[in-house]
Image: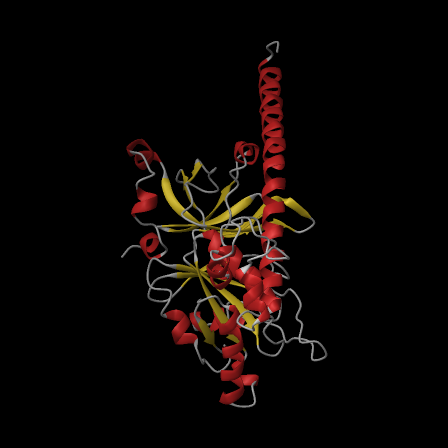
Length: 354
């Protein structure tokens, strides 16, 4: 198996490359962000490539995990970014109408929670909704299992996470002892890519080091008083795993603001199943008569906190969708203006009249 095939360059991406492009361009995968440049892994090695202004104008800026086409040579410009199979996105911090793509073409998203900080079900539900919307498979990883008093405590924490995981697998692991690392590696067969997502200090980079069998990512101890860490990992980086497959590590993320509502129902399938039995199709599960969801809360079959979380995330996703529609129109106007500016610069440089 070739290097790129082991990193996920399969039929979906090969079919996008024309015969003419095959003759003059090389496919590669973005492995690290370097500002105006990207580190890209080609079949013959890793090189820096430049990002042409037209990609920024068109909004096609590649991120770590993207497959791109570029000519041979040193620091060549990217010719084209291939269509993504999946993308993990969130609403950018402070600007809910702006999409921030965290990683592209990932198959598995490992949601990392440190046992020293405890499992927060509401945070986990939000993260799972974002992952389901991405098209990737979510896996919950409870790190620092070595800090638990005994196996019974680990089992209790795993059971608590399973209750909020919506059917997603839950793995207890420790990058220091190696517990659970083989289970994670088994999910990253040749051609598959995983990405670790979680707060600073959760143990993501320690797990990456354990998977690679080398200290490639800097790690730092968390503060004892609140079990929180600092951003030690500077930027996202894709690592090829021994034997095939890849994993992406990056800075800690405090919150995944929902960008798409496609994943909410996947996480709350129990609430959705109850809602199908409500008297009214547009039931808000508040005070409507014949609400099967409220009945389940009242008789103890559904936790009120879970219903509250469902309603909150649904409302957030709807609001994000409305803002996305408005911002999409604004972005298109900005794109057209940017194209006109580029044309004016071109004609001025050529000495022609506009």
